[in-house]
Length: 210
DNA sequence: GCGACAG
DNA sequence: ATCTTGTCGC
Image 1 (cartoon, chains in turn green, orange, cyan):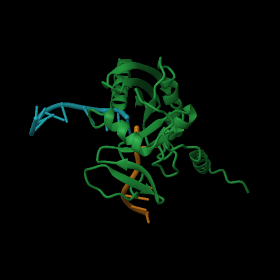
Image 2 (cartoon, rainbow, N blue to C red; image 1 turned 90 degrees about the vertical axis):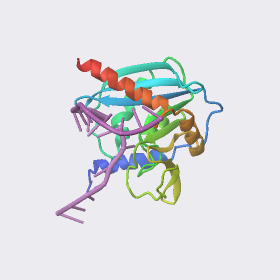
Image 3 (cartoon, rainbow, N blue to C red; image 1 turned 45 degrees about the vertical axis):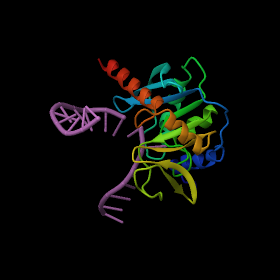
Image 4 (cartoon, rainbow, N blue to C red; image 1 turned 180 degrees about the vertical axis):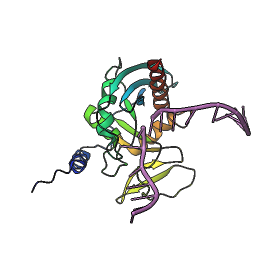
């Protein structure tokens, strides 16, 4: 009678929560942008890092790290259930508020419109941008060359990609604004908030091993 | 059956 | 994600 299809239950949760995502800017000006990333050691032991960057000069104005244990396994399409809690926890350690958040993973450019960035954005109720290095599945349609191209899924524009990264709405921001902010915050291929968070998490991880 | 599959 | 050196180029 009852079928215990756990992955399907999680998928249902994602479909359901995706309806709450707001794809419009819920803020006026952006002065500080935060970024969060996680570095792994032995599968489940990890270091989560959060940094806040000043958008004017792209300098780091605050940063925090925490050690975490991730209990949920990595399953493509369900990264939010694995990493959202750790990301939220480390962001709460930051001293000051920030205007926009960048997360290492897809936002609505996701099979069920609810990737890690949307998990975090919705739970924290803040403007969030999702940034990933690759499409989660290879069958979105977009013209492939070097410049930024719009990605469509189910007849809807869900994000933009170039050869380096994919950008999509996490929550409370428009795709256009998300793309603009990512460009403003970039010195290299990854925007500074995420690049700095990644460097920090990796360095703390190395220290921890010694 | 085979390959694909965010971090 | 992580395991890993040198190397090409500005």
